[in-house]
Image (cartoon, rainbow over all chains, first blue to last red; front, side, top):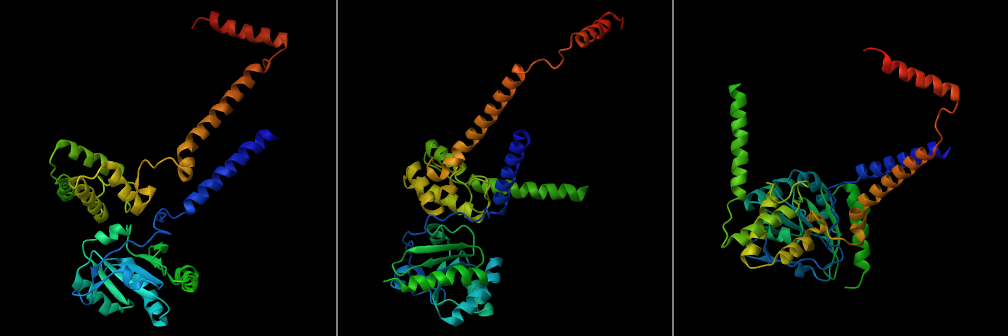
Length: 177
Length: 156
């Protein structure tokens, strides 16, 4: 009996292992930033390049950082989700315009709507490297103490926003600053 | 045919210029150049995940190569450069991840499976060796011997 059951069992185990492996998303690289302080930067603002923006400006508040670019097709897909989020005014949404031309970025926002409280310009992508960005769009959730609590790689869908990001934001808002 | 040749030529030109882009860094001494080459071969491109920084022509890979180059020029050690990358992109950025709790299965797994295979093979072979010969009937054996002998004596 064992003669037949053992190989069959091993085979089923192997199939299960491979099936789980195939179901995983290889692009979801675990971020080393979760639970660590958000990297600092001081970047010119997209709309007013003479003024700057820095993560320190949002101390004591829960905020989202969305990395986007006008050349990024997936950013177009997630943009309506952020437009809807902005209308609810539930959380500060900071844009990080990654490796983009200022005029292209401004035109993109004029065309599709501007959900961002403020947008920082990372023209050479140096800040992107500091934040471990490897594919736009990426979205970070930062708590009141400036700690990164969540990173989402790829376009934020309505489901991701509703099931992952917003519940976390509501939790974090209850934490003391 | 001509179109095909032109196509090949175009592809070759594009790849040639890509390699040229990689080779465009200048170093103060050959050791630094060697370190640069070794490092970008060890670090994984996050965008095209099965290529290292040296092979990849993704924008991010170019930026990271640039970063490695700048850090070498500033006198950073190999370990400092690797730490810089791991702090931002995690162990995933290394083609040879360090041995620790989360990567133990990755390092030991293949050897465990190999040992299992060897064990199964050893048990199987031993069992077969111990098994009695399949034919024990004296008459059958004689017939078999006769058949074999016949074959040998027969002119071919």
